[in-house]
Image (tube, rainbow, N blue to C red):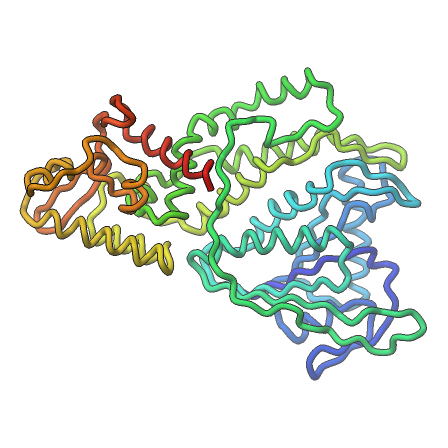
Length: 426
């Protein structure tokens, strides 16, 4: 799918000028018509700041004012109809009003909205026009786009191009060339942030009464449910980073209130925005925990597989998962570990601990789970994994308590502990 994304400032103040893009040219106040005509995108998304609004009667009126003016402008310049607009929260003092809040809200809100626009299961060709962008809004939009595209690239082919026109100098400029300033194939970069247990990191308190803020967090049932699964979620996040196919399949998130928590945070955030005479005051800010949840939800959708989660997987299924998700050195080392496990378990057997089979073969596995072994062997640590062979080889994590750090612990807690340490020491 081909998508054109443009970051815009105050479109009503732009002057008519001749734009040239490749061998085509057009005259108008915006690059949008010539980019749409030349690139022929399937969809266009325009990012604007709510600081453009002059209607301070309510939050809805604030946004509607911009949307209506934008619609008139797009009709005047003859823009294509396959188009969305995203109005992000901005900050600053202007002649028409003052907007107070966190500058990073623009990034988190753009991330939230773009995650809903970008398709999950198809190759992408994204074109980003920064020509008309409003300073930091453009930078944060670029960052939000790249963060999501790097997740999409785990499974999809993703191309990314960025454009910016020559500077416009009043009474001097006659023609502006639209330049390609970035043209790249996006490399995959999975989510690398963990779910934090600190509820204050999801919605940040700026000017809200402390008791009111505390009550909001205490009554946030969806988030509380989610944080109870923090260990398993962080284990799954790490499985994508470190090439742990059995853990990826076993811990694949399903039926968790991730999107519900995100939507609830947006609702709480917007309900805490005071709009008055020439003033917008955001009493809360969107925090890094919110951003992590948005990226986690997006990554789950990108990597979704019909058969997962699943506790017991055949060797063939683990190879398939690995080929689909992992790349480069991580994929190569994961294949080696799967091959190694297959070479150990050659005879027919019912479910048995892999460590017991190694002992029968005269080898001396570690008597307890070792952090480095777990990561070095693609999560297939001999004390944690059970195997079965009846023609095909099957693997699963044991449900029995296993020795770790000198005492018996549940496998899920051991894995979460190992990967928590890995997150903290990066």
